[in-house]
Amino acid sequence: MPHTPHTPLIRLRLRRLLTAFLGALLTLAAATAPAQARAGRVGDITEFPLTTPDSFPAGITAGPDRAVWVAESGVNRIARVTHDGAVTEYPLPTPDSFPSGITQGPGRALWFTEGAASKIGRITTKGRVTEFPLPGTDRFPLDITVGGDRALWFTEANTNAIGRMTADGKVTEYPIPTPDSFPYYIATAPDGSVWFTELIAGKIGRIGLTGQITEYPLASDSSFPSGIAAGPGGMWFTADGLNAVGRITPQGRTELFTLPGSDNLVYDITRGPDGNMWFTEQAGRIGRITRNGAITQYDIPGPAAADKVAFRITTGPDRNVWFTELLASSVGRVQAHPGRVSGPTTLPAPVPQPAPAKHAAPTARRPLHLAPGVDRLLRKKGLVRR
Image: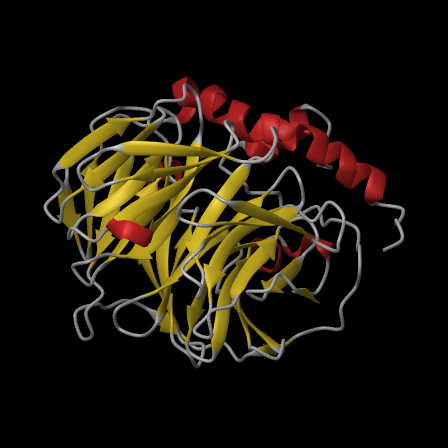
């Protein structure tokens, strides 16, 4: 694929983006992380503090043991949280490995990425940790899922590739056709194929179990797709640059559902136990969208909810929706049973997908939201436009 006038800027971002991703977490710890909160119910949301302050919980998934498991990116631990908020933390063998994505996988274990260590980790429900090095340094795996072949599939942000690892640690890597695409989050479709977001390229990617990759461009390079999950009618994703939640069919047809308001900072998404899609808004809300596009938004408790930063989200083993609060060192739970949630609802009409505009100039309105504060740090370093 030929380079475009914006490629040098993208390459400059990528060379220092991963450093910023890690550094921003430490930079923000003293300045913006709120005090650890008590667990308490307000409306449909309950919050549970983790044991260690400034733990920066990122990925979250349901475990096989009726608990949720959390990657604590700031303190190099994996946490187990029960339905009533009891927390157990397990330190990782490799220092400063930066655990990020986590999923339930083969052997009734939890599998997770260690970005800074270029490893994939495995932890049993008893807390025993095994680490599998990737074939080379500086891979920076970010997110992980289990494909239809029961192998682990993960994004490699720094090598622009999708990785596949068997349960015994054998790794295969597949390069993404678009250079510097920054593969971000990853999820498995009902047919067993694996789909992923390309944050900087503004595309949704699909990789078959034989490694063939197909890419589907969104409106522009500044769409910034991040979260992705299987749901009614296809794969659902978030696109912060478009202030929207989107759906893409197995054939690649895309619909966008614009969120009400302009300050949502929509980030991650999952399918809830009620069959609807649930998503996080870094501005301090949890959202729900039906297959027809009806959106309900729920405020996270507290006057400074936006400072908590709703981050990753999953359906828990208790058939509720759970999410991480990155800067509050907490996890939250939303009652998601049909008939047990309420809130203001709007019904935006589906927006037809615009004709793809390859490598469009980044918009000034939307920053990159890899993690809260990263866009701020990138501006300070002169890597993105104000």
